[in-house]
Length: 79
Image 1 (tube, rainbow, N blue to C red):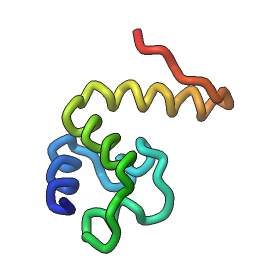
Image 2 (cartoon, one colour):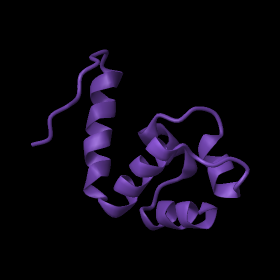
Image 3 (cartoon, rainbow, N blue to C red):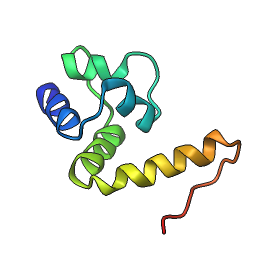
């Protein structure tokens, strides 16, 4: 639910922009999810649940994002 998304995001200490960047969301998607104006797709709902229930996945996603930032489009391997 929208309040759960916000509560989990805040519990993890992430801003809307930080979580949106981590999930590679565009525009105001996360803001609309948290307000209930729009509901996320099933696949993004699953990804949200993974991030919220397995906080260690954040580091994995950040690593994958760092690899993309450097111009490489492959998944980073976790150590």
